[in-house]
Image (cartoon, rainbow, N blue to C red; front, side, top):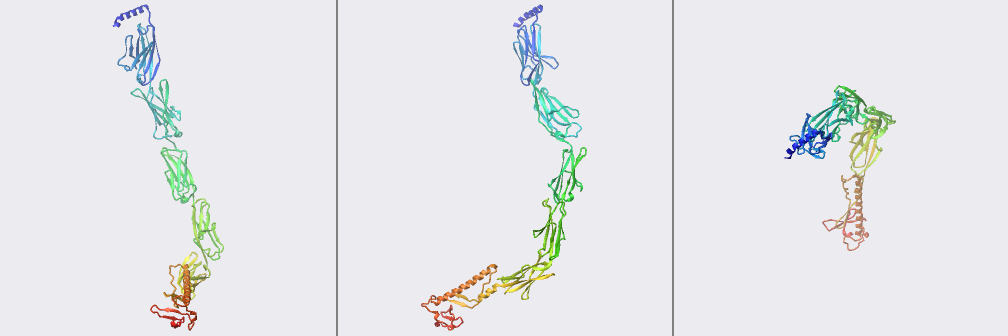
Amino acid sequence: MALPDTAPLLVGLLLIFHALGAWAIVEVNMEDKVEVMAGDTAQITCMFTTDEGLGGTTIQWFYVLPNKKRQRIYNKEPMHEAAEQNTPFTDRISLNVTGTAAVLVIRDVGVKDNLEFICVIKTITPEEAEGRTKLQVFKSPTFPTIEAVERGVSVNEEDPSKIGSCSVKNGYPKPNITWYRNNMPLRITPDEVDLKSSITIESSGLYSVQSELRMKVKKEDKDAKFYCEVLYFVPGATKMTESQHINITVYYPPTEVNIWVESPKGKIKEGDTLELRCENNGNYPSSITTIKHQNSGSSVENNKMVRTNVTRLDGGVYECTFTETDNFEEISGSTKVLVNYLESAVITPKDSITVMEEEELKASCNALSSLQTDITWFKNEKLVSKGNSLSVKSATFETAGMYKCVVTVPEMEGMKTSGTLQVNVKGSPQILGPGVQEVETYETTVNLNCSARGFPAPTIMWTTSDGKNLNALQTETEDGAQSVVTFKITSSVKVFCNASNDFGSKVVEFNIKAILNTILTTITSMPTISTTTRSTTTISNDTVQTPTKSPNIKKESKGFVIAIIIIAILLLAILGSVLYFLYKKGRICGRSGKQDFSKRKSSKDNIVVEMKSDNTEEAILLGVNGEKQQPNDQ
C-alpha cells in the first residue's frame, strides 16, 4: 500500500521542519450557535485555514458530554473518513467539505441534540486548531388549556382562593406562563396574588408546564375575565399563545335588600291575592331570606310571600331580612302595604220603610271605605237618585217598591257594594185602569183581571150585578195585589172588582157585552133556504143552528167567521129569489110554455113554493100560511 511507503517520508519531513523551526499556521472559525426546529436537519459549519492545504489536513468532530468530556463522532483524514460507531449520531450525520469549509450535517434533530459541537483541524505538523458551536433545538408547545375553579369563590375568604389552572405541554425550551385579569398581567403579591408553577420533563426531553392562580377576589371580579398567556421560543424569534377566557362565580354579601309588591300592580283591595318579592344585591349561597309581616308576626323563609283573599288587616309593614349563615350577619329592607277596603252598604232605615201617602220619604246610604266613593240609587234597574240621600217630597203608590243603593270606588274597578230598601206607601187602594171598563166578547167564558195598589195589600172581592159572589185567585204584587176571575157568561152582565184595606176601598165595574149570543139570536130569526136536485127551493122556519166555535180558533178570528156565515145566508136568500123569478117566467123546471104567475093569486096573496116528497110524484102546494092547495089551482 502507498501509505506505509510514505510514512518514512512524512516522518522525515517532520524532522526537517522541526529542525528548521518552521511550523504551519492553522485557524478555525465557527458560529456561536445554530438554531433549528426539532425534526429538521441541522448544519454546523467549520471554517478553517492552513498553510499546508487539504492534502495533509485531518478534520475531527466532537460533542461535549454532560460531564464536560468530549466524544468524537466523525473523523476525516487525508486518505480516510468515517462516522464513529456506537454514538447517538452514527446514522444521522455526514460531513461535507468544500474548500476551507467543513459542514457537519445532522438529520432528524431532536431536543436531546441540544449540545455543544467541536470542530478540530490538524495538519502534518503538530499544529491544530478547534472551534465550538452550540446547537439549539426548539419545539413549539401545544395550545394552552385553562380550567376555572368549579365552585364559587367568596370575597370573605381570608387566604387567596384558587381561581383556575393553565397548562401547556411538549415545548422546548421550557415555555413561560403569564396570568392576566382583564388584560392586565398578574404578578405575585403577598396575601393578594399567588402563582404556583410545576414543570414536567417528558421522556422525550420536552417540557410540560402547569400554572395555578390564587388570589383574594372582590365583588368586581364577578365580571372579570381571566386567561393565561404562553411564551415560547422558535429559531430567531419568540412567540405567544393566548388561552380561552374564563369567568368565575364570586360570592359576596349584600349591601342592600329590596322588598316590593309583585302583584297586583297598582292599588290593592280586599279580596285580592297579594304577592311580595324580596331581593338583595348579594349572591351568597349559604344564606337565609325571611319575609315577615310586622303586624301579625307571620313570616316565611323564602324570597316570596303570597297571601290570598287579603283584608285590611294584611296591610302594614313587611320586612325582608337576609342572614349570612357563615357569620350570621343580617341586613334587611322593608315596604309598607295598604289594603283598600269598602265595607257593606248601610241603609237607614234598615231593610224597609213605610210612609203614608203624600208624606215625605227620606233614606240614607253609606259605606265606610279607604277611598273616595260614589253612591247611586236605583229602582227597577233605573237610576232615580245620586248621592247618599234618597228623598221624595210627596210619596205616592208609584214611590213604593224596592230601591237599591250601589256604592262604588271610581279609582278601583270592581270595588263595589250594595244594599236594598223596601219602600211601602200606606193609603186607600188604587185600582189600575178606569172605574168602568167595557168588555165585548164572543166567548162563553171570560177572564177578568183586577190589579190594585195599596199598603197593606188590598183584599179583592168579585161580585156580579145580580149579587153573586165569584171565587177568584188573589196574589200579592210589589205594590199591592192582583186577582183574576174566570166565569161563564150566557148574556151580557156587569161584574164588580172591590179592593179594600184598612184605609178604604175602591170599586171598578166591568160591563160585559156578550156579542156572540146577540148574533145567534139574529141568525135564528132568519129563514133557511135549501134546494133539491130538482131545483126546488124550500123555506123553513126551523131554528138555524150556528156552528159551535172550535176552541182552536183564535179570538180575533171569530168575528170574521160569523161575518162569513151571515154573508153566506144572504147569498142563499138572493139565490132563492133568483130561482123563484126564473120559475115564474117558465125558464126552469121543464115547463113548455110561459105562465104568468103574476096573474094568479092565491086566496090570501101568499107566496107559494112547491114541496115535493122523495117518495111520490104528487106535488103539494103550500102557502106561506100553511094552507094546502091543489096543483090545478096554480
